[in-house]
Length: 214
Image (tube, rainbow, N blue to C red; front, side, top):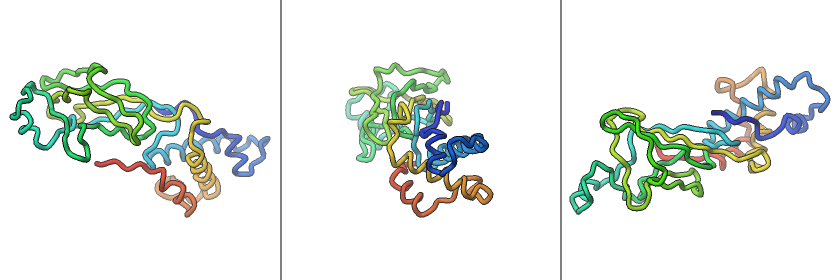
């Protein structure tokens, strides 16, 4: 579900573009540009400006190398996947794109019979302090085994800032610059309708990009 509003107001954008506040002839176009560049920045930077509901689907819960050795070493072979022990993901974490993560609404998975199961929230931990946010099994538990098919695990979660005032200033400025580029070069857009990344815009966007492992 997309956000209900935009991180900056139309009046803010008009001030940046030096468009007279009383001139409403281009309000529809400016609102469209603002929505387009917000979606564009969210996509290329991997962030969420304002509160929105997202879904992240993966084929299975994270596995750990050496899982069979752990089971052989005494962990009960109950059909549950042991925690990942690798240094890059020692907690078996599911990394959730588009920070900031606010909360996890549900974790659903297809069990080996094909039944859709909703996990009890006591069985996982939500790490909203990390960027991007993470979801891990609760202490002393394991991820369940899933059916062997694509998108067997679906996480629904809330991400984004609560209101425009909470959006970091550099995020808001990137939005103004991108909307300004679309306004200035609206007849000569690139990348299928995305504004050209000027040197300044590129420098502002660079630290905003959130990189996650494939």
